[in-house]
Length: 64
Image 1 (cartoon, rainbow, N blue to C red):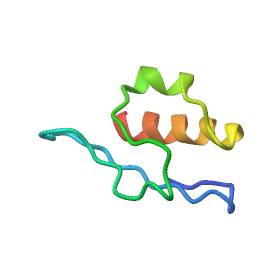
Image 2: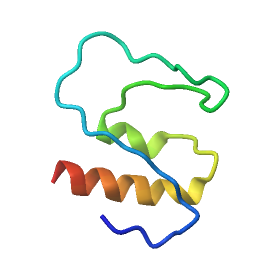
Image 3: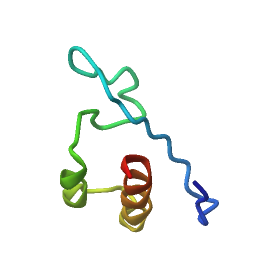
Image 4: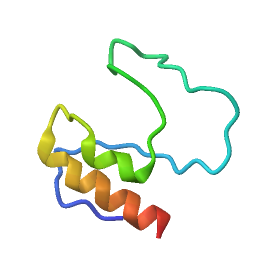
């Protein structure tokens, strides 16, 4: 996927199978780490709110 914002550094993972709960192993970098359904993403409070549309587009592309 091409992102037109060079200031955006985003990493995403499409998880199809997992056991247990994710753990925030870098609390100095992240406030929280948890699972979201794609339908929950529009309610996220982002540090940079304009980036939410890029995240939503990436999820739509990944989940087809």
